[in-house]
Picture (cartoon, rainbow, N blue to C red):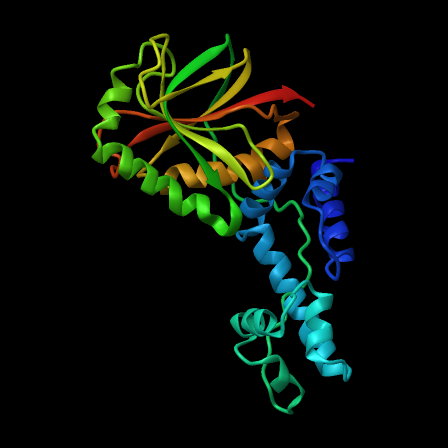
Length: 285
């Protein structure tokens, strides 16, 4: 079963269980990847989070039911995982712009979000610059914070974390620790869990761990390193998306499950020629 078949089979599982509690771990198992990376692949490929997709699909089916039968609103709310009419009404209004009770009136306009299906599309060639390296064990030292991925909180919290570290002169302290490769101050995602991961602002270092900082040990292995050219964060985000939707499906490799590293060069990060890198641990399928 190839990448597309696995992902679409996982979507089949989700669609079959929209009226039940959805086990993200089971969906990820069907897709043959970790729960964290399944959610990540989905968000890059669909341009929305898995949680948002499930909410939109449930609200679509709830609207169909409200129009086609006389079941009570509370019964439909409970069916789709809402324990109170208030919570269900709030979610329904956020999608359709009207209350559940008004759906049975004639002339009410609603929104329908169809089931998603992933397929491979052939686009104009756009090169991806990458290299594969075998690296020994690496050690990183810096500031760490547990980051939630629920409702896209990671996209909000990580930039704030950087601001906090830089305001406290933490950046210079971490930079001074750098004596290994990749050089400089790095952004590192590690210790992936179902709805969170540890994010490090750290340097590759063999120095002692200063008070208030943490260390991250990464096992030796194979890495694919992608070069990003362009202003931050857009250039790097574009490469991240292409890694999961273009490179992995066709490469013969899969994510090894350990830490991911973002390397940033010196210079103006808003420059159109700014260089950065994404390091991802890989294994042969």
